[in-house]
Length: 417
Picture 1 (cartoon, rainbow, N blue to C red):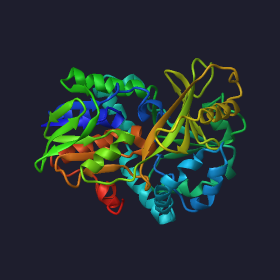
Picture 2: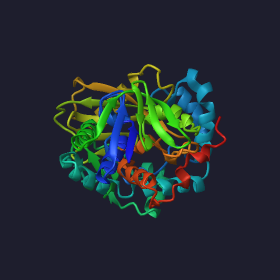
Picture 3: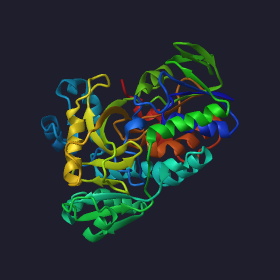
């Protein structure tokens, strides 16, 4: 079959690799270069974490919303003037994690996507000649003390209950593994099977090059809709229509209008994230660390020491607030006392495509047979991409996917306006 994959980010390129390996013809459509800074996968924290299964929404979160509106230095902020438009999404978001039962259900669904994420990436990288970018040395979550970890007791208990392999780290263990980390942190939890990517943007562009070398076509264009009679016959773009047998919507935050054109209304919003990167810092963690007081991923990448995080709820086209990146830099200075406060650094801002219930949209479109959704992965797009690719390829071929996709169906939003 000829499949048009709309979006050349990590999900789209992983899907293209899977389809090519199964013998299908692929056209990748994107208005920008694969792996470029416009993509969420370019600037993320680079974690490949089986522990990233806890949704952002949790019991009692509604009590914290006033603080999020007021505190401009916290890990989550909401821009006041965007609040009226975001309010319906926020209400669904808070309801999704309102009880422990709901949190556990969402975590179970995400666990099905992420439990073997590092191994899947290692296999994908090996097949495409990119093994040097995937590392499986574990991941560390650092706390000031055990009491601070105890405040997140439910989250870590859910992870253990779902089989995530964890190891407690004493202060001695923690600083033996990360000597440059501040002695302010005295306790850690290691995700034993965790991994990371040392160049997410380079990884995506490398996957795209592998696809092109094996016959895929790349069209620099914006997809605008579909032609169907009633089954899909072509994807419309601003550069003309592309006749095809199937199409995959994997264009991240830009997927919402395409999903609607295929008959599905999805409440997709941007959780805007930031990173700061220090080239040649001289120090840093050999194993990626997330200091839990800052909720930021600290990872050594090809570009230097990267701190990624923050959740800023605002419109996609709102100008970046670079103070959010500077907050990350100040956290880095506190976490690694040996860093130079005057170190040169670069900033980045991107848009995580997020649904209110914390689950991606994976499955067939409601009104146009042959169109498939693969977007809305929020914080776990990088980690979950290879598994998503397999699920989508199975659906395109008419095979039963090895996972119940009903919780990921766009039909769960059928009352969305």
